[in-house]
Image 1: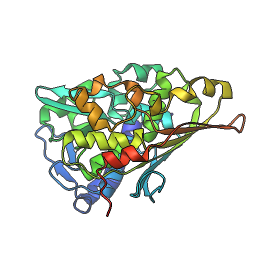
Image 2: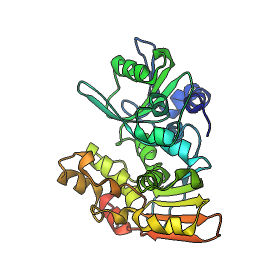
Image 3: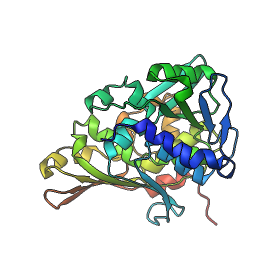
Length: 320
């Protein structure tokens, strides 16, 4: 796997974000301790292009992310398509939101390659992930701009200088925030496979799509719609170097339909659990449909189902 995940993300920022802040409607926030904060949607509009870049930053620029035409079987709006030939690094070493960044009243879901620098998650050790980059780049899902204290916290835990720390921020109820979350179709499949004991290093390449939902008016609906896009409309294909029997032993357990919480819009489930994300069955966070293409046998094995009727409810679609 590539070793300089954070460097790769920072180079993307230097190359495509910083020279185009105004056009992208992204704002660089000043920080007294010289750390860098990039606002993709808290106090600025952001947009589709900003969201595509944010998703790529979150995946250490190890994936291609683009808006694709609508899939009429799922949703009439556009879809977000993600492809990668390094799904372990892109999704598990970087994109997975495994860091709860909290201090005082501030809380954000932390993802991005900064996690590989911090290296305090069991999954990173289990997958043998290490990143010697001299910098840290992270993505925070929150509604407010983090203070200088948060940058200092991230820098200290990642073991890098504050001036080498970059945080990209967007709320779920922003255009960029929506795209950043919906780009996690492959990541949810990879994490679910890891939890089921499948060797992720056997996954050679990956492709995922999910519908882009309307931007929601509040936090709960924002989380609900972006999750529903994957849980009920996400389609993932994994090219795997393994045996059919290994796939068959866990295949039916991978898609979201295998969860006890499957079957209703996520915002409703979220409310029933008193807005505690961690009370939701972890098995729910998976794509609706997953296909394994076995490179050894030439067979394809598919599991799960799409649920466009739940998406229509979640996305508050009114047809005339």
